[in-house]
Amino acid sequence: MFAIIQAAGWPIWFLLLTSVIAVALIIERSITLREAKIVPPRLLEQVMAVYQRQGVSDDVLGKLAKDSPLGAVLAAGMRNQKSSRYVMKEAIDETGRGVARELERFLTTLGTIAVASPLLGLFGTVIGMIEIFGSQSPTGTNPQQLAHGISVALYNTAFGIAIAIPSLIFYRHFKNKVDGFVVEMEQLASKLVDIVHGERLDFQPPPHRG
Image (cartoon, rainbow, N blue to C red; front, top):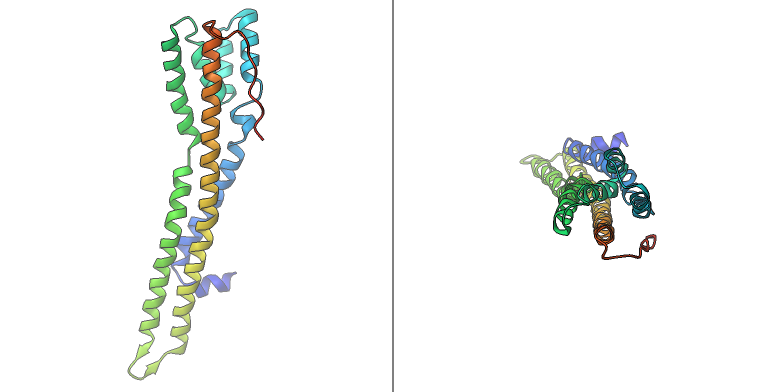
């Protein structure tokens, strides 16, 4: 591995740093964006059971808000349960925007890596081509410099593509996952508003997403 890094030249260090960041972000988002952690099953059902049995206190709402992103959205609505439907929805929407932004944390960076990695590889390729042309002299070609230039050009191109492909795949995967969570939280929050304002007497929890 160290021999490959040496053959790829100094431009490869930018790609290695980029790859480390990408791997760290993929691991972090994989751990964070778990359905049970973002949208706990039966949470709305539990909240409504407590609300109908004893109402909700500031202490309960505080714990609910810290429970999960969905809990934060439901807590925002329950804090305004005595207000109009419009005010309650506005409070939910405001908190929901903040939650969605937090769920998308680091995704922009991962997407940027997916786009920038091939460009960094191209930069290394250009450096390699410069070395190839530099190996030409009036007295002939320097084989060692020529070989090194070719190695720099090829290795950097390969590394750039190798980093970009998984980064793009995971970026789109996480983005789709976040969009799904946001839609599910919107549906559950809408049900909460309907139930609190007496416009929905029945409650059926949404099917578990596989």
